Image (cartoon, rainbow, N blue to C red; front, top):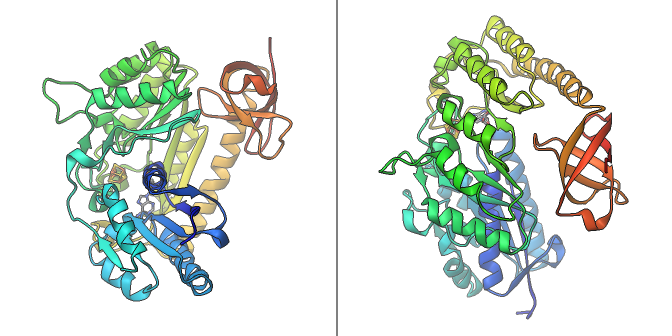
Length: 441
Ligand code: 5AD
Ligand code: SF4
């Protein structure tokens, strides 16, 4: 085998999947691999998968097929498939039959064990490890990658909510919170290696710490993280509206580094559909939470997720979603067509919506939201925002790129020495996805 071994890691899906992919890359580094983007030059390819919608699965299956040809050209190449797709009941046997060229299969609860699996694969074995249940103590290793300006930090794993459309609780298990002291230590370590912004990750960060006694909740954790010296910004995703407490909103309002951005998935504006989705809130309750956020944080940015074409969604239900979008000024919305996931309650519901209806509703929703997002960016023109300068803009390398506290992307004229610090930028122009601005001294 070559001495300088290269690994290409691809992550599909949410930030949790990206964070898991980072963990796997870190493990391979301990095994002597260096990261690369070049598939042609790879000794190991890892695909961390997503199964939240059928479209993600189809994309991944296509990629797995492509890798077969790569392996034919380079028989020493090892391929590992990990994450949510592998974890679905019965999936491993199906996938193994379909893709015999894969060397390693690893479930969502088996990441820590990856080096042992890799050793076996390097000896020419085909290996699979997919535990049905997680084992609490081993989940937090290794920690987020050091030396970067921004880092994603897991604060909890799994989900207890069982929204009727969602496969996540089935593939990531029940909710488990990491201990506050472990999280704080990880962030302190990251900051001492140059990190200035952390995003705290959980399927529902608002229910962090439910299993702790004496009581300690997400707002308590945020207050502690806010005290860490030299950290400039703290973000968090995702907030389930049903658990968004007044205490949390007030904590964000009073925090120094806590960014005024809430990703608050509404999913639908119809109470009938919300009930069938098992979301455990009504449209009125959700609007009340938004009002509360704006009362404490008039400048807060809100983003959301919306599903169209959930089983039983009538034209009127869909109209209610559009009406709700009109009431709430989201800076951005992630919009999806409902995708049937086997093993979930909604997959068994009658009155599934035909594909052409789902497509039409999605198009309509997207055009309404694109207009609203543009209006949101336009109302920022002329105002000054605090930006964390992240680095050169990809599309315009002479300029810098960074984000507002509300998570809006801004391209601006700046100096390389400003990278990693906070600068004040006056917004001058709103493009279709990006804002443009100039530094105010
Ligand atoms: N179909 C479509 N969208 C889904 N999501 C989760 N499950 C499904 C599904 N079966 C969306 C939800 C969630 C986001 C991460 O993905 O909007 O908030
Ligand atoms: Fe899925 Fe609902 Fe849990 Fe989010 S809260 S991961 S949508 S079950």
